[in-house]
Length: 171
Length: 183
Image (cartoon, rainbow over all chains, first blue to last red; front, side, top):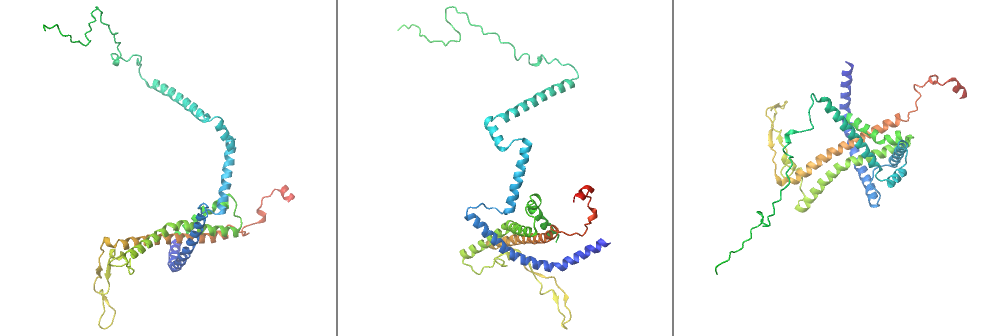
């Protein structure tokens, strides 16, 4: 019951304070135009003097630097190497990281294939002779070697192009 | 009020790192200076787009007036402006006043004096007024955010640096006897 009266009281208070809120909003809107123009001229000054356009305050820049330094220190503690050492290792052996990756991938594939085979053998209910697949046995029959035609001295090859030799004419 | 409070609490996210993580801001004066500057910067970033929309509307109106040489043009006009899209009623005939001067009686529904009509020739009024309305409400939302953040700064100024001894009791400190003797 008390909560209902509390809600009603808050609502009435809001209704009474609405005109004050609107007056505050109007003054803030006018002040906001001045603040906007001031910040705009600051940014234009930074633009024309060649500085980077950034809304970060000096405290924000300092905080970002401190956070970046702390993260870098944590990474060095985890890897045991500084940035300089990592770059030097990359220059000395550029494909070392790829070699490690390839070895791990091959190991993973080997394990997968063995597991797949074991899985297949476990599930087969009866034995299948997979050594000979008789469905396609005619597909790969041996073609007899080509027999060369006997050479009777005529050099007559049925596949040879017939030459037209005119017969002797009376004329 | 709730929206103002919500927008004020968004300030915490922006100023948390230098105060909490990095311990750069440690004094009340420094906090006030930093938080007020941050409030202005955030307002500038948020209100850039609505002010740009309003400025574009003003430029379109100026170009229309200069090119058409129509310096008396009103974009809210009922005939040639945004007002042509609005419906208006005539309330003058709804109440009949008795001859004796006693209170009038409602006798009629209000008559429609202007019905909405869309005319492409009024394009300038439509574009300008819509851009002003959109930009204006958006800008007021940003101003409300700035007010909320200001109230939040005034609240944090008291709570963050409060050195009140209200609920402090010296006997509650559990200091071991040997350390106590050393002190």
